[in-house]
Amino acid sequence: EKGGYPDFMLKEISEQPRVVRDTLVGRMRGGELDIDELGLSYEELDIIDRVYVIACGTSFHAGLIVKNMIEGWARIPCEVEAASEFRYRDPIITPSTLVVAVSQSGETADTLAAIRDARIRGAKVFGITNVIGSPVAREADGVIYTKANKEIAVASTKSFIGQVVSLTLLALMLGQVKGKLTCGQVRMLFHELGDTAEQIQWIMDTQGAAIREAALACKDAQSALFVGRGVGSAICYEGALKLKEVSYLHAEAYAAGEMKHGPIALIEPGFPVIAVTTRSPVYDKTVSNLKECEARGAEIIAVATEGDEEIRAIADHVIYIPRVRDCFSPITATVPLQLLAREVALLRDCNVDQPRNLAKSVTVE
Ligand code: M6R
Image (cartoon, rainbow, N blue to C red; front, side, top):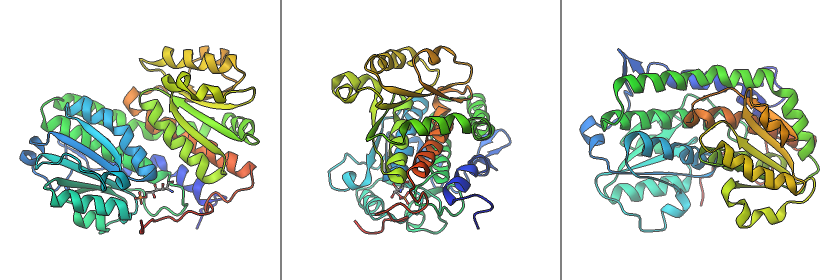
């Protein structure tokens, strides 16, 4: 069943290039983006003036990643909230609000309760799920299915990639309908999105040794910090969750610019700081935050863009990912963090497929 892999987690991480391809297949017809199960007409999409993405756990992190795309491409405000918070407050919802529920299982109790409530308040509801006919799929006006296939490891990996790709399609669709993206721009972005399949494969094929070396540096730590800026900080939330879940090593994610407002007090010699420092407009800012950690003796593990030699001056370990448009870097940069979490867990003798205290699907509150 594991197809020759030692565990489901590695098998599922390895399937990610296929998930990208399958989630995109058939979505571009005659040069136009086509989401046939969208369930919302162009007119209904055109009136949308606010988007809430609601989800839990890893699915919530997929939402954090797409916020900038929805705001940047469609120019409408997008908030991303944990379903367990959203459902107990009084959010501003009108008939022109789109609530997007993201759920691998399609049956998470808080996510379901949140969309039921949003519908009663008049919102349009859209689902992103991996399970055909699941409650989220049935109760939403429209749905995009992630094509991850069954995910067995409790820690979500391949379905996260499917979610980010699907949410990106939705953001492209909104940008197109709102007239903020031209057809040519949509086509170009769509193709670049598809290129991430090969880029993930490149990481899997070439970065194993660097990831194992970085894992050794984390193995005996009490705690680790993940830092990044922009979409880099959203990736960090997922990296920290993965590490906590499978290795039981305490990890926290911080926007790098927030370090000096408190977390830097934690840094002492040998403290692991995992930094997402891919080439982006905020690269220099992140590097300057890292220098402050380096000066205090942190053990720095950087996820950097291939060809970036400069980063070696401050990082103890460097894991490379291919150069990619900033908005798509979460799809590639998450992969080394998944692999790092798994390696640390194995070094600490943890069961990576079945972490303690966790269930694959959380159908109770
Ligand atoms: O099925 P869902 O996507 O709604 O599940 C949400 C979370 O329970 C899930 O992502 C959880 O955080 C995973 N264990 C993460 O690896």
